[in-house]
Image (cartoon, rainbow, N blue to C red):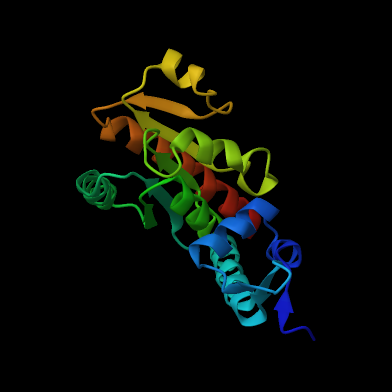
Length: 198
């Protein structure tokens, strides 16, 4: 069996888009190097490690373990506020964080969160671009997207808008409103798991 993969092969094995695999390589999530001809080669063990993480995440979804929330925000103090607020809700959730859109895409691919909470104005890659890169990927069709921004709806539209179903809230962060949306998602997931189990 091959000890290395092309970026395309790695993307197919991991079930992600070619662009996501490229981002994982660029950020070091996937260990890779370039051949003399300039082609990327990705270490087999690096792909297998990510596959195992993905299987663990998928297995956790089916056995009813805590669902995942990803918070993408470039201000460390605001990230801490989110973590404290979410903890105070008393829900059995796993919280992951990222400080910009590129890191957010990596976390999305690794952990497949049930809820994405994101700012829009961030360095490196903003929230609008990150959400756009998710595109029509079926892997994220059931994910709830919550956007919290200083931009008003018209300004968000000027930047390319948000997908149908995404919730836009204005800063300062309305933690109670966000909790309501998260609880609705959590309850719907619990009901679905109970139906499957029953």
